Image 1 (tube, rainbow, N blue to C red):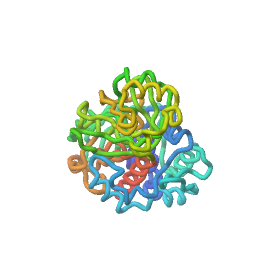
Image 2 (cartoon, one colour):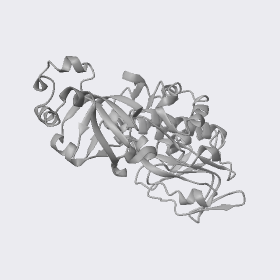
Image 3 (cartoon, rainbow, N blue to C red):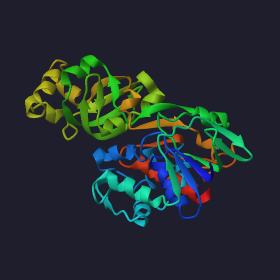
Image 4 (tube, rainbow, N blue to C red):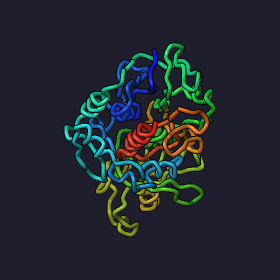
Length: 355
């Protein structure tokens, strides 16, 4: 089988690249190991698909890893709202700039992408078993020749050894947007409860980052969007990091002295706090030592991957001609709120227009 361009990975980035290529390229093949393309999209946003964020281009602080590189890519990006409007899918804006399909179902997003891949042949149940350089192009799985290759197989299922054989290095993948593990003795009595809190990542007495929102107590971990947005820091600081919870951010310590615990919190939370003494101080600065992050199966995305220093601004490889690397495979990851899918669409579009 011969093709002009092969795309490894039929997830968000791979499908987006194929839609762009369908406007110009005669033949594209998507190679996907799963039984269907766009599988992960169906579970995002609790099945609604938080497909982007209107603030992605301006909110540099929402991204981690090779942030400056991502900013250059976003500077050339039209935005997810316009991209999907061109595909016939209307978006709905919700709080904090989050974008959802107007239909409120993730199926609409995957359907819009699949229907726009008019010149792409999709091969499902087809893992990538090998890539060899051949005559300036690529021999894939021993039987497919492609002039150019787009690697869009990100996440923990990605076999980085293929890219390493093509000359690239890899920043070790690490779970991101996942629960933060802590002392089981602190969490277990509160398992299943939720509390609104100001959450701070503290290292050496210094607040590195703070988030506000609902925190969920699990058997041996803290969860919730605000916690997951701090989880990428565990890669850098490990158990030197502590999570501090202010579970009554609207009140001062002085105000809390005159309010009974049962008037503020669930009984189990009130009983647990009461065991610590110095109640107002615990309420405003409840410390949870970090012991790690939840397993990768609990992570929404992967941090790490191919360093941007090895890529050109159009996502082409500096080390391997005619190779493009996009999406989660690149060392760029974002906070919750549609930022990661926005990166997937943006990197795919820039690569697709330049390939």
